[in-house]
Image 1 (cartoon, rainbow, N blue to C red):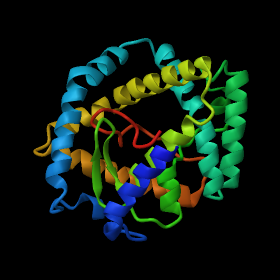
Image 2: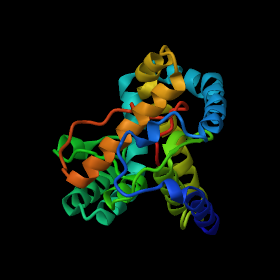
Image 3: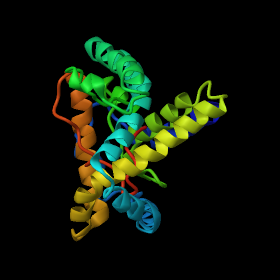
Image 4: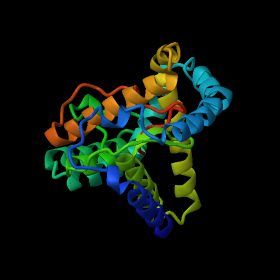
Length: 253
């Protein structure tokens, strides 16, 4: 936790002159930033990792039977519900928090540890929430674009949120069983998310500038995501994995 706090402070300190409240959504996509050469270098590493390992695995996974993929998706999603619940509360979205808590209880029991989305069939739809979204709801602007190693395109606000979320996610994790379950859920979520993002990334990769195209799509998705948090609606159109990084990892856990 101390390491995560230090990393967060370093990011905020180094970039504080560019983080403003209520930045326009297009601000992170400006291509004239002096940090772009560094971002592109990191992106090249992420793209190589994706092409060598993650994308081939995701393509193989995409050919599995739909019930198997659905179970992996639901299980991974259910593991993240406690963090969604916490961010719902931080955003004062109390109806959303009740929906999230109900989903977790129902799917963890009747849904067999989340493999089956029983709550979804009972008109309790899933929604995502993370610390990056929470910071945005509180009024923090995204700041400039940051290409994170492995995790892909992000911004200052969401990068800090990711670091803090990862540290909180591991609090109290002193059990081998819990650690194993979390690892299985995380790996499954990465592969499932990358498979869902394949149609979009295959399309973007044919553009003249894959880095810029993916960066802009990610920025637009995160801007919409913050607006969803501000609205706080329980029932929304199902979210797709079209804002994922080149490696297929979600913007935040």
